[in-house]
Length: 280
Ligand code: A2P
Image 1 (cartoon, protein in one colour):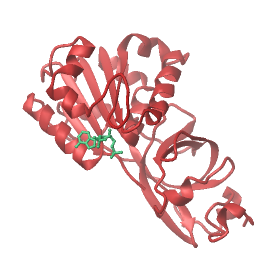
Image 2 (cartoon, rainbow, N blue to C red; image 1 turned 90 degrees about the vertical axis):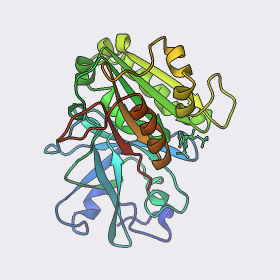
Image 3 (cartoon, rainbow, N blue to C red; image 1 turned 180 degrees about the vertical axis):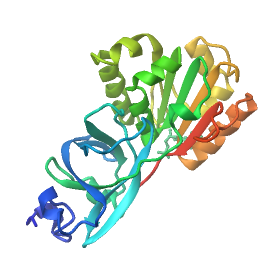
Image 4 (cartoon, rainbow, N blue to C red; image 1 turned 60 degrees about the vertical axis):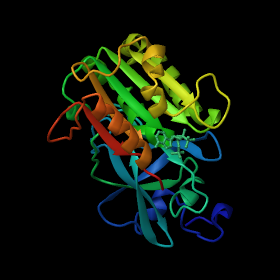
């Protein structure tokens, strides 16, 4: 165990993987953080090693944790990296007194993170029936599963156009998505598909920004479709995925249903799927 000033009260919260071999519960992966990037005082991303045996579908989530006072504490995290990536990426909120994120936000390269073995989730290509245009509606850290899906070639094989909407309270919170889209378009593998098909549509609700307003208001007023130069939502061609707070999901879902789209699931693919953005 490390004597670490970052953990003066909880000496064993942040440890090296080797330090956890004996202490971690059986049947979980112990992975090593490779990079950490802080965006704002509320948001950061980290990447970590990926176990060779770990398989998931782009868009799924997994339980991520730390040992806190000797006890594992997990929260659900959407995997932000695509299924083909050799590392795993996560995008996280920082809650000052959050049981997990108050510690997780202090991780640095070399630190250990626990991960349960079974990924799951509904924001997967398999849960949608074929269509022409895929809308990914996200707010805040709800962009994470879409960060995975926009880097998966299968998304572009299934759809002619992929529209990623991201709405945040503040301009600085859009940075992760902006970097992500730029990296995706410049990526040697996925860039070829993304360049022609991916559209990034951002708005901000609590600061000045060229485009303001909640995504629900932009749908209702028709501004979203006007800005994109596309017809209003049509169940024959449009598909949707929604990820944000409970309220955002509820309100966006109503608008999709009013347009005639029906909600699907893994065992019953349909025209749109939803998942709550998880908060630690
Ligand atoms: P607003 O600033 O008007 O609350 P949060 O960080 O609370 O999850 O919010 C992220 C973004 O989602 C904010 O821009 C917020 O707008 C927006 N939002 C919150 N609730 C809803 C909702 N019910 N429908 C659509 N957007 C919402």
